[in-house]
Each structure stands twice: as structure tokens, then as C-alpha cells.
Amino acid sequence: MKYFFNRLYRLVFCRKGFGIHSPFVYDLITNVIEENREYYVYKELRAERKKLKRSGCRLRLREREHRLLFRIANRFRTYKMLVSGSDSGLIPLYLTKFSNSSQCTVIEPVTQENNVATSDYDLLFIDFKYINNFNINEIINKTGENAIMIFAGIDENAAKWHEIASNPKVSVTVDLQNIGLAFFNPALPHRTYKCVIPSIRNTVFYAAVKFLEENLL
Image (cartoon, rainbow, N blue to C red; front, side, top):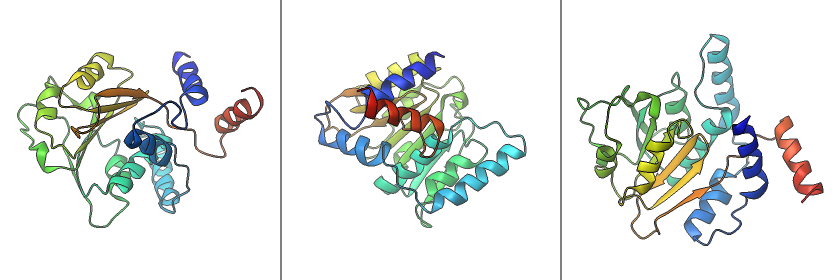
């Protein structure tokens, strides 16, 4: 219930880049996070989701979160990616669908023994469920300035997310309730932003929020 009301509050009051002065973050929110174009790949990807769910798989991410991964990879052209927590293979599928040239390496779980050279990757996706006794700052400190890190499960791991947002190497972090984004460009001011991934069109929740926006605000 707390998640629902928090999401509803953000959908009404933390949208469309209101109050955001950073051009980078404003563009990220309005043209990536809240972008609602129906890409042709969504139909194929939805079919894969349904197939997995029918087979009994319990997916970690919602469809709107999976779609955001595609939009991020597409927007920033991240051709070399590392994933820990593949969500039954859907995460690599969504991340790489923007280009046949994109590559994705899956490591589950992340441990000290993996010794991953994260500086080699454009994008890293990490589900906190798949980090076993690993100091997250060790991964961050090896990550390049132009890389993007995406974390799943930040609402269940507030302390770890705060540690990431507080790391001096991290410039911008975006809290999307379950998903967290981290950027490392030193030219960007160090700050955390809170917003939300909008509901997919033609759903009941989407219609309810549109009603609130148009009639009560």
C-alpha cells in the first residue's frame, strides 16, 4: 500500500521535469523516462514476457521497468553491457534490442571472485538480489566516467542505494522507486532526483492518473 501511494504521489507531483534545472536530467526525464512512444520491438518483447510468465517464471521487474531499460540503451547507445540479475533472460533482451551490434555479458551473482573489469562496459545493470557480500563501491570505483549504472531493488535496499548516491564518484542519481540510475560525468552536479516511470498507456492506472491531472489539479 505504501508503494502504491508513493507512486501515485510521484505520478501527480514529480513529473514532466517540473523544477529540474539541469538540462541533462530534464532531457533524461522528459525524453527517456517518461517517453511513451510505442516502439515496434515492444510487441515482440511483450510476447516473450507472456511466454515466461505462462511457464511459471516470477519476474523481478514490471513491464514498464523493462521498457525503460530498452529506452536507456537506445538513447545512450550502450553497445557493451554487463548484467547481474537477468530476470529470466529478459534484461539482456530488452537492453540489446536497439541494435544487432550490442553485446551483453551476464554474471550471476556478483562476488569478489568474479573480479569484473567494469571499466570495459558502457552500461551495468545490477539487481541487489544478486550481489553477495560485495562492496558496491568497489564496482563504482572501477566504472568509467561515461558509463551508466542501473540498480534494481533500491526500495528494498535503501541503505545500499544511499551508499551509491553518496559516493563522490557518482554525479547524478535518479530514484524511480524500484529502479535507480547512476551517472558518473564529473561535469554534472552531485544530486539525487526522485521521479517515476509512468504506467503503460491503455491501462487502468494510466487512465486514473490522467483523470487526476485533467480534473483535480
